Image (cartoon, rainbow, N blue to C red; front, top):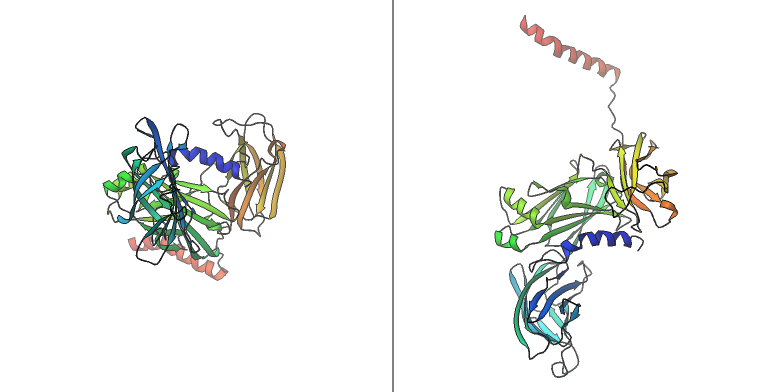
Length: 455
C-alpha cells in the first residue's frame, strides 16, 4: 500500500506498450484491442482473466469479455459472440455466447471429464428471460497457465436483430508460478521463484561456481509466429538474503544472444523480502534474436547472472512519487571493513535531470531490514551538485543492506529504499616461511634457466 504511488508512476510509463496492442497481443493476462468502426460505432473489445496467477492452490479462472463503445467505454447491448479458444495450436472449445448487456463472464472450472460442459447462468430459463452473459464452463481447459488464443466473431451488436460479421484475434497469458530450491556456495539454501507469462518453463539449473541461472521455455521461432507475438515476459523473484544476486546490473541471454539492458528491469519496491527481476522481450528483441541465433530450436534458453559491470546511477522514486533519487557509490563493490563513498542527487520526477536543491534529508544504511549501520541527516547542495557521504563498513558484517532516504523536505511520505550488498574482502593467501623460500627458489630458476640453456 505504501508503495502504490511509485507503482502507479511505473505502470503509467509502461501503459502504452502494454494496453493498446495489435489484435495478436501476447504475454499478458488482459488485452484491450484497438478501436475499429463497426457500422457507425467505434468499437473495442477487452479481455481480462482472474485470478492473475496459477499455482498449486488454483481451482478456477474467470475470463471477462466486454464489447464496448470506444468513445465512452460503455458496453454495447444485445451482443452475440462466437468464440473459439486455442492453446498450443490445439482447439479447446467453440461456442456461441449471448449477453443482453454486452458483458460476458466465464467461470472456468477444471474438470476430469473429457467432455466440455457450457451452461448459461440466470435461472431455469435463461434463454427465454434474457441472457445474463454469465456462463459456467467445466473442462480441463484453463487448468494450467500459458498462452491462450481466441478467435472472436461478433454476430450481433446493439440488437439481437442487428446481424453483423466482425472477427477479432486476441490472446491472453495466464501466468505460471514455479519455485526452485537451490544451494549457493556463499549464501546457502535459497528459493528462486519464476513467474512465466508465456508458457511453462523447465530445465531450471543453478551453477553456484559461476553464479548463473538457466531455464528453458517452448517457443516457435517461425516468421508466422513472430509476426503475432508482441511480448514475452518472465519474472524472477530473488530473496534479498541471496546477496550474490543482489547487484546493480545483470547479464541475460536467450539462446546465447545477449539481451539489451532495456530488456532487464529491477523492481525493489513490490516486496520487502524479494527483489523482482523482469525479463521483457518486445518484438524488436525477438526479431533480433531470431536473426542472430545459429540454430533455431523450438525453445528459448534463458541465462541470468550478475554482471561484472555496475549500472550507475541507480534511479528510485520516493513512495509518494514526489522525488526521484539518483545514487552511485565508489568503489562499485562495497567491501566489509572498508570505506564506500555514496554520491546522490534529489531530482524532479517529471523533468529530465532537474535537481531539487536545498532540501533536508535523512540517509541510512541498514543491515538487512533492521540493524542500523549508519545514519546521517543533512541538506542537499543549493547548486545542484551531488552530495557525498562516506560510510565505513564494519569488518564483521557481510550481506544485504538497504540504503534508505527518508523525510525528504520534511515529508514523512517522501522516502525511498535501494538494495545493495556488502561483500567479503578479497584475501590474499599467506604462505609460511618455508613455502616462501620454495617460491623464491622456483622464481629464481625461471629466470636463470634460459641463461643456462644458451651456454
